[in-house]
Length: 380
Length: 260
Image (tube, rainbow over all chains, first blue to last red; front, side, top):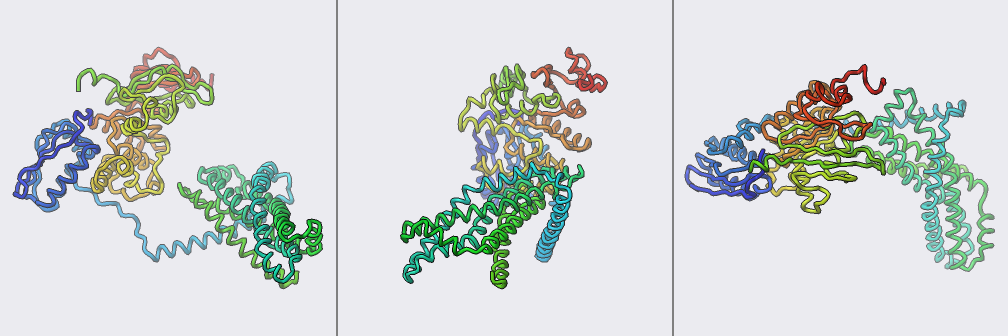
């Protein structure tokens, strides 16, 4: 190993195949580059002919690396396992030191057993994880609430600069993609519903439908989905990376509450920006529907706008915006929670971001369902 | 091997300069590494030790000058030739850089799986033997997060040894280790250099470790932005020409630059 290989070939000659004494003559350079063919051939012939004595003649070997040493180890092991004899002859002393380094003559040490994991343990651990998740989620809600009360009493202590930066990133920067999604949803709904409406001669109701569905349902939902995908995952990844880098620990030891420091600005940004993004999504969505109504169904733009405004009641908008505030809180809270709960390994941050998006979407749809029932019951 | 080629250096750094964002960090650095040596690169924080190492292993391109590994310049080599040079060197990083989703055995197997045509059982055995020589036999199935920092460093060394490189670069091998673990890692390096004839280039600022392992040191200075001394560490400490180097190696706190 201390010298460069003089040749770049490994050669194997076999003598006494099928007899009790098998002789393997190894020559040249035994390295991981040259060995593959020789390895297969040598181990195959020893396995097949099962000699009582195996002699490896290595005087022609001029270079040996870890792979070469491993071959000799393997040949020896195959013999010892069957209770047969093995001998190595003629290996240059400088190369033989390598075999000593690898302790070729020593049997492998038993593996240190990993703690056993049965199905029961797996199920138990999963249950504990769910329980822990729920508990830490509730704890975060409580801590955030306390943080909010603190922020109300001491508005000067809120990190307004951070809040503005986060608000810009999560709100303003998400407008282009929100516009695209809402516009397309508006267009699609108008097109899909125009045919059935036309068959009843009820084209003019397209304005009512677009207005109500956008304001009450689709605007808040589209905005929330975009926020969950863009912002929820970003919060989880950002705070997750901070957790992995021990930055969160550093905050704690400096006497700064990570929830107050990291979560409150994001929650405030979510509460303010979600309704703004929602209003934007509603306007663009109605505009998208309006394009179809005027170009395909022959309504005038003026008529479409008047009709939409006539249909909508104040409660429709208030209900939609109320929902969007709740969605904004869900996105920010789940993102922060997943970030703070990140496991400290390579896949931790990725897992946190993924689980933030999935949890956000599930909670948003579930909450939307609850809102639908409540609004229906109240007759709003 | 002829006598002449035995003397040719395994690494040659010639008039090397490094720049970051247009600003020169290091300049006029020239030295060689001989086969079988443990060369330690040392210097104060920010002097460019790790930067120099990262240039030597081909991660960064020198601003000027060149670095030859076995007479070949990594930045002149293309494609296959570059890969060939890279396979001849092993590297361990400050944070061990083991892949967290793989066991220690899988980490050690990876270079072999990717660059050799050895059969499966052979790769497995070679990887096990590499873990054995760094003293991790029995821990093959553990994940990096389940073993101690010292064991992670050893596993990283086993992975660096997987393809039997003759030249190994280590960035701060003893960082974050207690003195005893650090000393046992030093002993391992010396054993490997002695028995396998490996050459080590080590970045370190642990004086105890440097005096124990270094056959030669080169010293970088942050203020002068260059190499200010090279040679035997004890010789430099006791009789070196440069006063700063003598103080640095003697660690005479009363005269440190911070106080001055």
